[in-house]
Picture 1 (cartoon, rainbow, N blue to C red):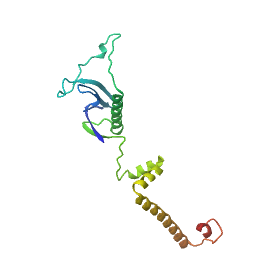
Picture 2 (picture 1 turned 180 degrees about the vertical axis):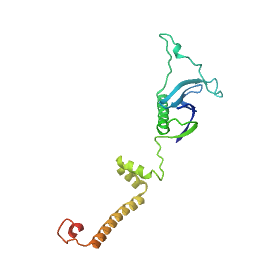
Picture 3 (picture 1 turned 60 degrees about the vertical axis):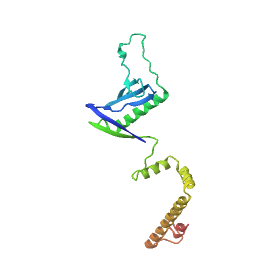
Picture 4 (picture 1 turned 120 degrees about the vertical axis):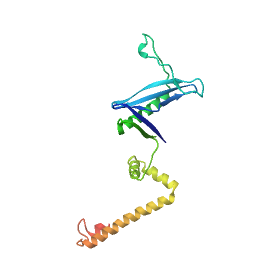
Length: 195
């Protein structure tokens, strides 16, 4: 599943993310992350919003300037584990956009793909197969494939055997055309090649 993240430049090297990331939501209150990306990274505000009924639009709580807090005063905002995870994911998505594109001028839309989703195209099919093999999952893939489609496994096995035999016939053909190989003496003798 992909999500579209839209940005709009608001100055040189800085863009506002058009839609807030919802960190947590209750019927009458929610916590959102309003983000901006800039040449040096990501910044933003965590905003608590409230509404009086389900039909109302979300309105930010009256802003409190924390710089005016006196000694021994503080502001606490409870942030659940799930909300922290959503904040992390939002920052990760924005960081990926910054890494790939930087801050682009004007209005832009970026498709962010779920990292658990694998999208295989003609261009990346071989790369994914190589990654699976390099990660050591080749036996597991083979067993799953055998379970799901046994006739395909048989065809693949026969194709591999036929490919190996074709190479032997090509080698034999090349040796016959080249000539000059001894029957039993040397590393390149007919006897060694046949074995």
